[in-house]
Image: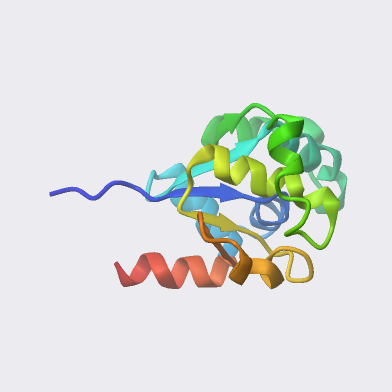
Length: 143
């Protein structure tokens, strides 16, 4: 019996790190999205953020946009009402959209490299697990 691929919402930090270094943990997760080991989900906001930061990883905006659109399921931006629901949980209001989109995607995991603002609040969120790429790899390889 084939298992369903876990749904994983990706923060821009993981996408960009994976593109920059395909041999690291984030790169491994992008490979798992490509081969459907996991279902990679991002939002239009994450797509836009990744495109804007493409020069930081030595890629063109078009290269980053094409890669994301080819392998990820993309969600429309969450409503402002959904975003507002997270304001008392986050440390930085700018991260509310990440949590709102994660909820909207009905994912099992939110994968991020943002230790200061997202990984640090993982105990406050129960709808999905907030994990680093390393933690997600360990969780999935255990199954």
